[in-house]
Length: 340
Ligand SMILES: Nc1ncnc2c1ncn2[C@@H]1O[C@H](COP(=O)(O)OP(=O)(O)OP(=O)(O)O)[C@@H](O)[C@H]1O
Ligand SMILES: [Mg+2]
Image 1: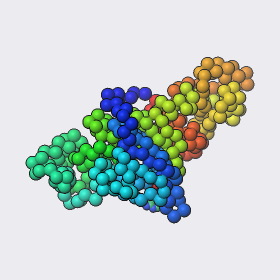
Image 2: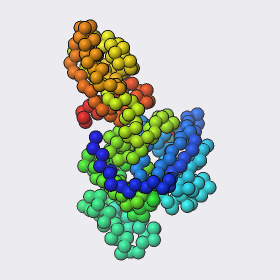
Image 3: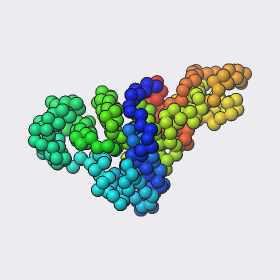
Image 4: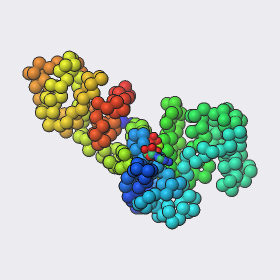
C-alpha cells in the first residue's frame, strides 16, 4: 500500500498530546465508551477506527472537554481535561464545533469572524480567509451564504475554520465522510500538511484505507472498547503475513472446502455466502500447495484463488469477530476487493 506520510518530523521525546486512561461514558444503560485508553504522541496522526456507534465521537467529545467522563481521566499535553478545561481548550481544535456558524453569512464572512475572534487584525483576517478558501477550493462559493452550501462544502469550510488558529492538537471526527474522491484526497493532503507544520491530529474514521493512508498508529474500537492498537503494519501482522481467498466453482461445495481449509491450514476460515468466497489468514504461503492438492483429491473445483497481504479490512474482521457473513462486514469486504 502506498504510504506517503514519510517526511513528517519524527518526535521521540515522549511528549504525549493525548493520554487517556479508562474513559467511560454511560448513556442510560448503554456503555457508549467502556474503559478506553489512548496515548497519542505529539507530532503524529492517530487514527481511531470503528463502525457506527462504536463510541468514536463520544470519546473525542470527552477529550475535547465537551462531555464529562463518568470515569477515567484524560490529559491533553499534560493538562487534565476535567481540572483544566480552559487550558485544554486553548490547545485543541475540533471540527464540528463550527457547525453553528451563522447560516446567513457567507463563507468569507464566517472565516473572517473566526479570525477576528482569535484576535487577528482586520487585514490579516481578510487575507487568512482568502487563503483558506483558495486552499479548500471554495473561492468560487466564497460569497454564497452558508445555507446554500452542500455537505462537502460545509466540511471543507469546517476544516478551514479550525485551521485559522492551527492549534497544537486537532480532532477531526470523520473528516472525509461523504466527500467525493478528489476532495477526499485534498483533505488528506491538508491533514498531512498540518502535521508537517507541527500539529498533532487525532482523527476518527470508518474508512480503513483512510487510516492506512494517514495514521502513524491506529486504535480499533468496537462497542466502546479498544480492541486493538498499534501501527498499521503491526495490526496487519497480527493476523498473519498473508491472507488466502478462494472461491469454489460449485457453491454446494463451499462447506466442504471450508472444512479442508480449516484442516490443512489449521485456521478458522470465514465464509461469505453471498459471493461464495472463503477467506482465511495464513502464516505460510507455501501451504497453499498442500491445500490445492487436498482440494483436488476431494473433487472440489475452484473458480478463483489468491494469496494477498492482509488488508486492514481483514484485520478488522479478524479482531472484531464480525465474520464476512454479517451484512455490514460483507460490504467492507466487497469494497476492498474492488479497490484492490
Ligand atoms: N447524547 C447521547 N445520548 C444518548 N446516547 C448517545 C449519545 N451520544 C451517543 N450515544 C450513543 O452512544 C453510542 C456511541 O455513539 P458515538 O456517536 O460515540 O459513536 P460513533 O463511533 O461516533 O459512531 P458513528 O460512526 O456513527 O459516528 C451509540 O450507541 C450512540 O447511540
Ligand atoms: Mg461519530
